[in-house]
Image (cartoon, rainbow, N blue to C red):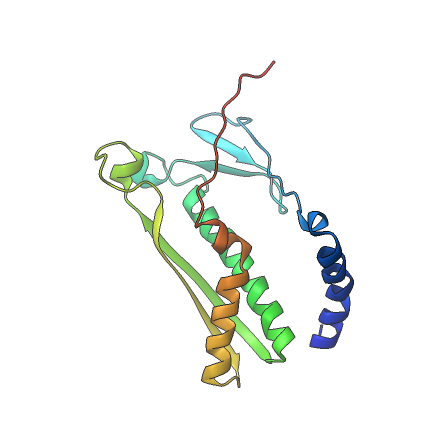
Length: 168
């Protein structure tokens, strides 16, 4: 897809959202169950069910997906698609890309060992290496706009609300 085709596809959407801002509020949903045993949650994904469990640092055996890794994967997917969209819109040719998301968590926080230790993935850095002839200015603009428009990245700035209910 080139910049002209991207603009053509997005034009009617942008026009509609300008006319009716409520139409832009797009619901998202994920679903999970306790279908599998152990300290796990099975989450539906585009590739099929993923069983998440405890990280080795918190008592897991390493056989289940780590939700922290899944968070980084979601960030990487969103940033990658966003960067590719921005590059397309700006007419920056990208022949290939390598994307790496890294972070860490302090197991003391999630295990309740030290109330002062943070709970959550911290020190998150997304590194993108492009095979491109883009200038340094274009690369900086790609980074700035990707950070600005990456839904998952921006979502990390606001903690979610967690509600627990009794089912019937």
